[in-house]
Image (tube, rainbow, N blue to C red; front, side):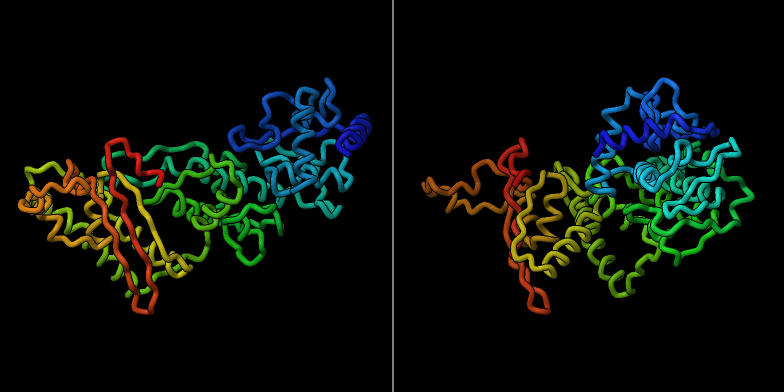
Length: 390
């Protein structure tokens, strides 16, 4: 099938008409991002708007086409659009839909249904898709991760709307995205393409900044698993943000307070003792407890945790519910029963050189609605972190 398609492409390329070329930003993985030039005819005279079709990329194109035939969502959306245009009968020069650039006057591109689409709509859709992708790829570099404001956030040219054919005048213009334009890529673009969300370019840019350049930086576009990428993208870019109830916010604050107060108390009470505290990462406790809550709702009955020294005591106290009196005794060195310790019991290894940061414990947690879960924090027998894979 692939060979027949290539032969047909060669015959069509002979009748190719000249069109102006506009190329995609090299960092956004558009079809023309291939190192060599490529044409539909795989010849030495590529069509001006399909310069990525050369014989050098023959094997690559065949593989992409084969993957697309098996599963259209397995290839980048720009390839998906290109192959659909070809199979709908587009002539060379009209199948590839380029992103907007400074150059003007491209021959109108036919839509998949065969009707001539508005060049403005096509340019808007592609330009916006590349803009959104730029924020997905590099937005974390401009995230506000300095609460003291000591560092100036960098200006990234890739996040400038002018890079994608837009101007300041377009900020107040509603951007129309063709239905199903996202080609299976979940998230912001998918919601804009469903026809139920009309937004101006300015609103879209503000939304992207809020999502990727606020106090949370997320870097995930390097992941190869499409399903995992879509999951993270959908969680980050969902237009309707879930607002937690006041009761739930207070519950989270209470759990965070337990974590913070625990570390502060140990730091003040045992300030001369070596301590592997959770200072600066206290949110681990409410996060871990939320994960356990959600897991039990889904049927989880047992949870085994392996972790290093850092934060272990906080987890033992506030998650696994190890008696805090016992932890204090271990700090003071008064937790050993001298009489029983001197008894010759060769099977008792409880005090054989283990320090408080190597110890673990177990706990059966019961919820008000009857759910139960057995929690275990595995003892860490050495500094080699051999327990972590558990």
